[in-house]
Length: 234
Length: 221
Image 1 (tube, rainbow over the protein chains, first blue to last red):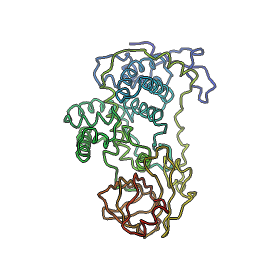
Image 2: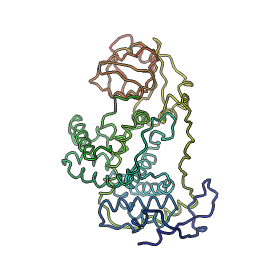
Image 3: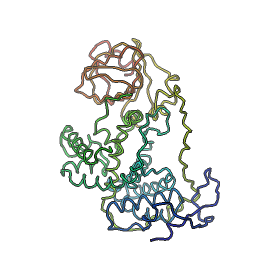
Image 4: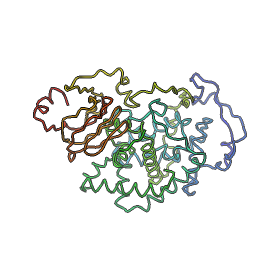
């Protein structure tokens, strides 16, 4: 177990409005008692753990970054995700410089937004994926991705998630992986092109020279299968 | 509120994966603001993106680029979560247009500067950065028909107030209609309130009426 995770790093009050700055000079360490359940996630990210263990560790790292600006956790998260992000973004024909820029800005955003991470909404990988996607749209297309505002009074809210959903999202990642792996190859291919090559379904149809209707039905079949695999929670 | 018409899986997938262009994304995001069911669908799709990121092969280099990153982070504050209760809970002053649409327009319904289209119909164009589609608000007077038309390409329509119906069903607040070349329709606004919709198109509508076709360049629709 890595002791660093049991330490609560506090920065001195900075000029930032909420006082939570990234700063080297002024940090001091303070040991505090961990919250309930924290000790089971104490290990560093390691290769070879089960998918569910890795998902829980990544979640733990994100929470540590958000709650206590834990720089060791941030470094571990970087080591775990930066190489994969480079491959992910680099497989779209983006120039190496731009790939690096997207990776760097993604981690800047991870740092800035870590306190907003909600483990009941998304696994850590999913959250990192959405940040990288938005950074890429911002940097390459120069637009802000149009999204609903969760604090908009006009938003139609959904019921609050149940207390057990926090665990379910991490377990769900493992179930989802299994569900994707058992999809027919042609459906997996469409999902891969959509997410990794970032092609629209119309572009996938054109590139594979397969009718649009066939691509649409592959997408619908894939999601039908995945939804039924994830069960009633969705 | 009961939403009966949702975007197709393929449009939600394009949106979740990040490939959907801006104009269409405004329509999808506006529907999402009004439809928790589809927000949940997008969450599922995003988690597929998370899985793909987990599964991708990568050389196991660690640390590369980390020093650069630290420089960028120096002095950078973390965003605080929005305090609970900052949103007005008062009923009755809910905006008609949800975000992101309200931000694009810079106002809510009461301040829209409508342009006359004739026959009691109005429109206002919604400015976008990516110009491969045209985004507009349409206001069709209650109880009146829109001239019969087909579509040169795709048309997405999200109802924000009132309702309209055509041969494919009835569409109320939050409902989205995905129309393409194969749909020839004559939408009819429901009686009661004027029907206000967000409409996104990538090609001019093709009206059956010769007079309407002649007026199209003037009306800018």
